[in-house]
Length: 161
Image 1 (tube, rainbow, N blue to C red):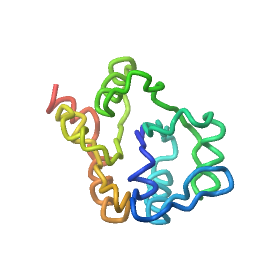
Image 2: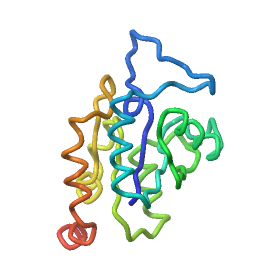
Image 3: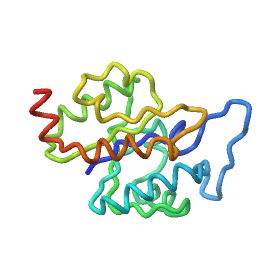
Image 4: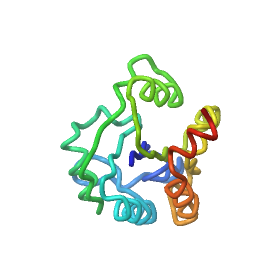
């Protein structure tokens, strides 16, 4: 399975009135609720690849990102990133471009707070967990994540060619 993962507004709620906790590695701490949900997803899907979609994706190398996740309680075995967004494309365009460039045959989930993703084509939007940037990923998203995981990708392809 692939998880397209944003950080701000997903793993770390974005509260403009509150300064986020910065850990010794120079990056924000993750919400314990978000960590717990993602731990559960990773535990159930051992062969998961996380694909970073965050605007911070270029700040650190993939090996540094793995350490960042590990310090926050998440063991990520497979980690990739969208390409650098030098053209200032919307997240929607970035993700659609990734799919155009990669032939995938595995399930995927998009976890993000970017409202531009509401305009994704139905096939992709059906696999979107759209969080509130003020709250982030939490246990209220668990049932939706399970619904996506339990909906085989090939059934989605049959219903949305």
